Image (cartoon, rainbow, N blue to C red; front, side, top):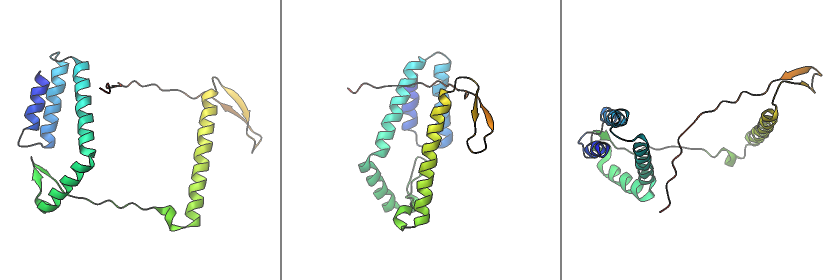
Length: 161
């Protein structure tokens, strides 16, 4: 198949730049658009490649080995035109600070989130225009049914074996 050849050429290429990636993607798209490759076949194959890549990149052994190799090579760790370096991320556990004001704000946020979810459930049940009385002001307010928007997406489910 042509898309496999294109991918194989890319993976073994000496330069894996953003431009090269875009060119490979454009070539693969062209194969489908021009009718050379079945769109479902190509989509499922690329979805599988993406999932394999994700599993590989998240593998703890691979991450550890790559970090060790990058640390060993220092700032000069490069492959295929890409620089490989270690970056550090700092995250804070604010709850561990014991700050009562922060804890209260988080409780208030959770309370608001719960109220929003409940209100959204109520609004989903509104099928037409309805009049309601605002309890705080006594004012009569018109509520319209929320406008649903629908989108489609492709779902690919792989067999376990």
